[in-house]
Image (cartoon, one colour):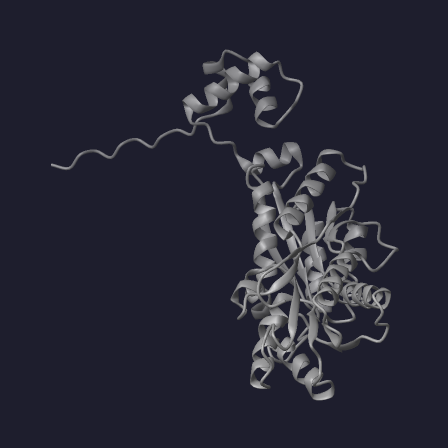
Length: 351
């Protein structure tokens, strides 16, 4: 004999919560939608009733009331086929810097009940599609990872009116946009002072891409510091912030200047590619060539020997981006200040 199926369970409604809490439906709605004007005792009664009944808010209906999507877009903007050695998406997910940013953002957004959406833009068509999607109200704001001087996205996002925070110094002054960065030039100065303090006299640098603010600032900061320390003609070879790019840049540097005894490499990932090139050329680290990197990422620990490097506190910086964005959402129409973090030098075994 087969038992009759159990009747479907009726979803808990606002009215049910109101009856348990002993308040009006309107009061329950105000508490659930985050209104700050509800009496503390009533708020507590409603919260207890929600827990007792197992009420789950209807997110779609709530969005109609609050006009909030409870989601933030993490937009990664790049140039199409920037390098032939590694495509855009593959490079992004193998870069330790990206994972640290995501972790820092989630530390702030998750407790606030906000979802993080990853969106990519690497050509005109994808940028147009992205802006169209964002205009439709699918997200409440944007954290933009954009690194290139000619990237139109910061200005396009400013025109949408969406709260936006940029990771890194903006290059287009016409776009009034909040940003979070590390003092790149101060970090490069730490590297220069350390190498000179070790007694190295033939010091060079592998820079980042010079179409990126971080690449420009790290090179300018290093050159300025070296000039102040008595070396105004520092040799520089441009790289691209990738492991393969670091290897290629080191090959070019050694071919043109084999006598170097110190090198500042503008990212740990580049250093990870550059150190094996030094070894193949018979150069020991740090005995023959002292090496300082930049980032203090997992790549610094993967280097052999482990890398002395300039630390930028990426997780804290990402948390600040999320905080700036939440403050923009909470104070609509008010601008939020940008933030610049201080770098530190982490001493390991390469210099």
